[in-house]
Image (cartoon, rainbow, N blue to C red):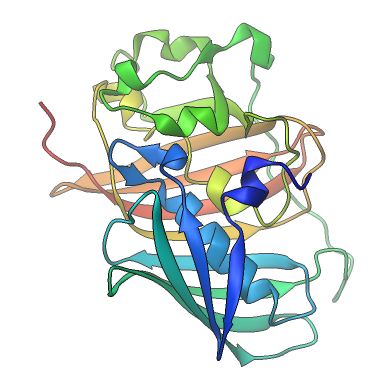
Length: 268
């Protein structure tokens, strides 16, 4: 990460004292008129990280109360609930225009610190063509304006060239910051939420699918380079869907998993 990176500048926080910070949210991370939900978590995680010595957010659960506002100031509140040797628990919220926008519970730890027996198992990435053989994500295909693409480059599996024609609600792709900034554990909650909704594969132009709740489990520190993502809709009922996803780094190591509840809205 460099000082001039968008990840750094668009998530910068200013301490106000008494467990409060301010941040200037950027509309460059918008999906339609609303900032991406994964992006909204990032300045809050920055504030939380100042309260602990552990560098890695190993589990992050966020409930979205209202949509965020791009190009507007936000106030962050965060507190350390319980310090721990292996994990420290924190709670925080982000407010705009006098209203809470999201509430987050997180645990920070050190992913290089080992504990317990030496048991190793993991989830291998699915086979994927390299990024230069994949197709660029398009807002016109999804049916919504994607300012987000100025901040994150996404390449989808060639099978998604005709979205809405697939038999399974699965999205395979590659993602990275558009300015070449390498991924970190602090940025993985964003990458867990930045891809098209996987129901896009079977239903095509679904527009904006807002998140009600998102949980991200960070497993390893990512290597530099592209991240490979697979997301799947496991259930959709009553306009609410459950989606799970996994992220692997450029070495094929599993670095994060996510699960979220989203809203499938009426779309013209």
